[in-house]
Every structure is written in structure tokens, then in C-alpha cells.
Image 1 (tube, rainbow, N blue to C red):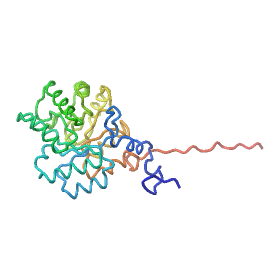
Image 2: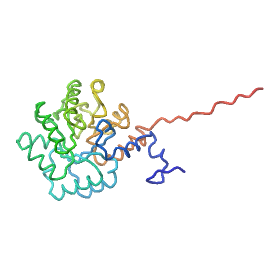
Image 3: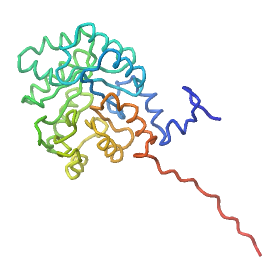
Image 4: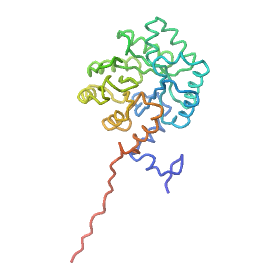
Length: 287
């Protein structure tokens, strides 16, 4: 029996679609080649306790690339709690960052330098530059991206507003993504909030605005450099089917990490691969 290096399961049962397990092994701790940074999973932590967080890392850490401490929650933890989260992520080579709303608050309060000092002192390894709540000029956005990169942080940027009913302009997204990446961003996130409802690509029922999505895909310079917020299973399935198993997905609820990885590999009915076996050629007998 052919088994995997991690257990007794046949490799075809671990990765029926093929290549996903190889992708995880080759890129789990490698963010140096951003253009190859596909198949990333970013989760949103909205307040996990110490034990729940530890369980998440122990059980599903190998399938997580980045943890975002949602919105402005980072200052609300005790120093010990925050250090625990950052330390465990670092041990598994998982990027960890405060939510973009916290940096927006720093911009609004004119304490950006203090924000970066704290992020680096605490040991965060990434930041998110967004303007979902405030307005950022192109110049300021570029400045924040460059500051993060200069401090040795991985930089995620985000396009889109958090206001209910806000939609996406495909041309504006493409232009923003191109300028963000040139400024030093690693990935550009498409906003959908933690609900996935009534924002960006998704309507009030959480369904994809298909025409907008198709126009977005047509305009984007490099889909491998885009991370799609998709907290709902139906949204994850749609993006997996449209872009492939190694699409970058974000705002994944912690409890759904392994379920998402199963869908990426074809180990769930929603994305189960159609496998056909070639039948032998019929044998013709002369009579």
C-alpha cells in the first residue's frame, strides 16, 4: 500500500485533485516569491480564547497561512494573551497581523508611527493597509505600504468599502491592485467583511454578483496576487470552481479551516473531482 509521509492514508485519498499537498509543502513558510503566493488561507480571529486558539493552531495550523486579529481587537487583549497568539503563530511560520481597521484608526488619530512601533515590538509579522472606513489618498496608501515593507513586515492591502451595499468597480480595483503591488504589497484583498453579505462581490443574500465578478477577473493583472474574502461556504465553492484549488481565500472562520482545505483537495462533495478511468480497448475476435 502506498502511504503518505504523515500517516497511513494513500496519497490519492489525501489529495484526490493532485498538487495541493505539494503546494502546501513547497510554500507553507515561503513568502519570498509573492507572484507564486497562491493557495493561501487567511483566517479572521474575532476573539478566540487561549485554549480555542491553541487548539486551532494544533489542529489546523498546517493549513493556515495568515491570521488576522479582526478589525481593531488587538489592543483589547492583555499583553500575555496577545503574546501567546503571536508566539504560537510564529512557531508554525504563520503570518499574523492586526486588522486593517486598527491602522485606519491610527491614520485618523495621527499616530501611525506609534502603530508601526507597537506592531514590530509585539512581534506581528504582517499588516493590512485598507480604507474601508476612512478615505486614503493614493499617496498616503503608498506611503503606508512602503513603511510596512521597510519595517520588514508582509503587507496585505484591501480594496473596497465596508458600507452595506457598496460594490466593486473592476477598473478601479485593477488599477489599485497594480499600484499596491508596485509599492510593495504582497497580496491585494477584495473586501467582503466577516459576514460576506451585502458588500463587494456579494449581494444581500451572500450570492456572487456574477457579472461584476467576470469583469473583475478580466481586468486583474495577476489573479495569484489577489486574496478574496469569502467567509461563507457557498462563496468559497464558487471561487474554487472559478479560479481553482489554489485560489487565495480570506476571512475564513477558524472552525472552517479544515473543511476549506478538504474542498480545495476535492474531499468534500461540493468540489468532488470527476474521476474517469480509461477502459481497456475492446478485444475483437475473428469468427
